[in-house]
Image (cartoon, rainbow, N blue to C red; front, side, top):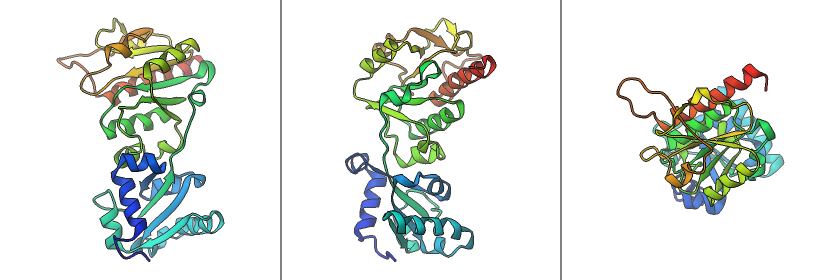
Length: 270
């Protein structure tokens, strides 16, 4: 059992939770909680840490047995950790008692494109981890084929983002582009129609036809899309507002757009 925060594994775990640079260098991230641990693809696993009290709760036995069996077969680390050390390392106020260290997956842009069924969410400089995580979770529900984001979007593997995805991080392909304008131009060449959610939009979002390959551009929470990115879009669309509301939360806007694609495609049988 690990009983000291000075333990090298605990130091690395803490660094992975706190530092984006560490996650990128090690190509690893940490997910906490029973649901997130249970759903992680087994081939991604690098280590599993369970608190002393978690190990001794009867309802956790089945999951612990699975991890111990997998660890014996695959060779990843499985460690019991004292409750005090686990709590000091955890990123949550009330830790559930289990966390996993896993490999960050890599996807190519081509893996996000699926012919006329392509349905992309494209993000420019989203800053709130909760917003990003909510978009990933909602994206899975709405049937996106992938999420593209630029380098200045908040780290997808930030612990708060991971928690907000509620497991969707394991199933939604993503691509972080070094050059968003160039990536958008490549998508257009493949026949993917790009729509910018923009206050200057003349067409309501529910008046367009999304039955074929499409992608939605969502901008920074405070500033929206930059002119450079918005200008690459084929069409500006708007979300109608009543009262004195000027705009919606970025994650809410993305949800409306993604589910409009889902609605249209379900009704047309695409």
